[in-house]
Length: 320
Image (cartoon, rainbow, N blue to C red; front, side, top):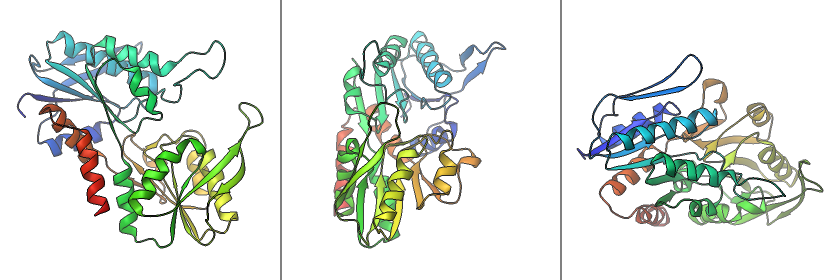
């Protein structure tokens, strides 16, 4: 592993340090600073010539700062003659802008992919992309990791009984189905409708049996928590015993924390793909780390072994 270099941006240095500990490599010495006018300054304090470099940087809020920081770090490594530059992006910002929904709209996720490639990123490690088609936006190798095994393992060890896994919308059915498979639980789906764009979604149907069951809502991103909380309230009215929820990326913007605190959700289980400050970590939010998962994937990329087998091995271990 002597040729491996792990570089952390400022978006999630705690996760980067955990990954470095699992890899048993020191973080590369680099300075990431700001000029008085807000411009980003990057300075590498040691040589990366001929090294396999990994930048760990989620593009979480403030999205623009962290995205540009990732681009500048990639450019610095490329100009310093790194053998390969891999971006490890636990949370991919702009992922929800992955298609045109109306006239004269951009596909911003594709724009971000182009910027990364032009900056010098040669390989991407991503975690639970919001939409699978985003992987097709990149003209470089992309390995897509899933955190569902870590989240499912948390609930397996809680020993919950009579569980039903619930997708809060039709778009997340595949994600919830895979989660239900690991838990060996049935699946239910909440069907919502909007009469017009930007209108609050109204629950129309709950598809599946939830009465007197313990419900686990499964999502990939919780932003303002409106969808999640409405789903939990609907399940409570349908007679579920308890409501739990989990997601990979806890954006938790605006009134999200207050909404969750006043909702029927007993626990929201999230990962550390996005750092949570203390005011966003009330008692009912639990955090599991993706550091070992990322470290295992980085090791496999570095030694040129299969990353897809990593997910298969974890799934097989959970199903035994």
